[in-house]
Length: 180
Image 1 (tube, one colour):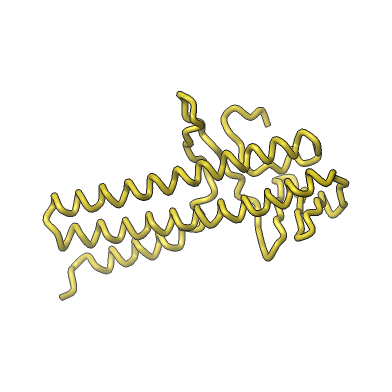
Image 2 (cartoon, rainbow, N blue to C red):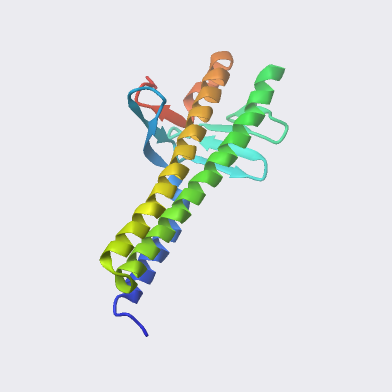
């Protein structure tokens, strides 16, 4: 049996699935472990292919960390200490984990949206509401992992920026407390 609003639900699911990778970009509220939440902004102008992370600024500057954990800014190799090379490698791996977690959260949210629409047509109201509540709690827990990822990225960015000031304009994670 085809429900009258199935095509609308399918369209909504398609839009949500297409938007899932974009879950990483934008502003997110993360509990920093203190009494206050912080808004965290993710700069969307970055790309990871194979083992190279590239970040571009609005002014056209480019930053790259390659598989050897070398840092290049505007194509010029920036000398960094062995400790910072290790941090740069960890930074790429943390970014990769952040991206994977963001995609997973986006897919879970899309699945929840589809399930909620489906349940609205196939379940009684209270059952549908309870199923949606339980699934949304799981998404909330997954989003907490994203916040942990973001805070790890921010800590790494600060450590690298302290010793390599050229890195400053290219940070991905910014909070309300950042001056830049």
